[in-house]
Image (cartoon, rainbow, N blue to C red; front, side, top):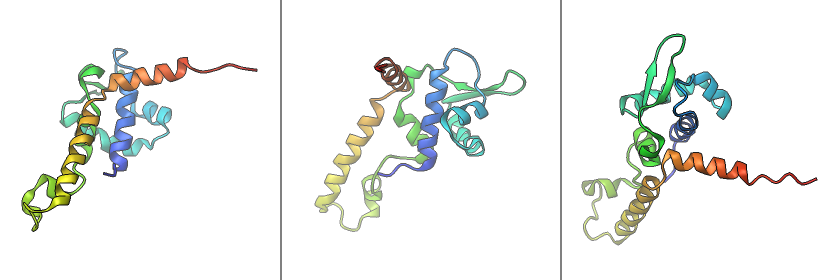
Length: 145
């Protein structure tokens, strides 16, 4: 499985929103600056995230974007599948009709197992977990001279 730029940038944007959860709306230009991402690209990435109900938006002076739910309720699977579709690594694991060798294809079973593991891994990590990872990394900084 290779994640698209859209999914990777979307994950970074969602991480920034999780970092600021409870502080109000965040401007895309600030997220773009903090994550070193193109703002114009984020304006396209945020659309499916809003449509799926993962983020909400507000127009106006105090507007911007924020998570629609607490960070512990949004998984990386939610983000990746919203932006990239299914996490299947080959078409035949999603659609048996796409494989003319099904049901006797032994390698399809391996790809299906891999799909399950990827899906489980993405589902096991929430945005809150990412925030905790960032906090732990910042706490473990050594100031030696």
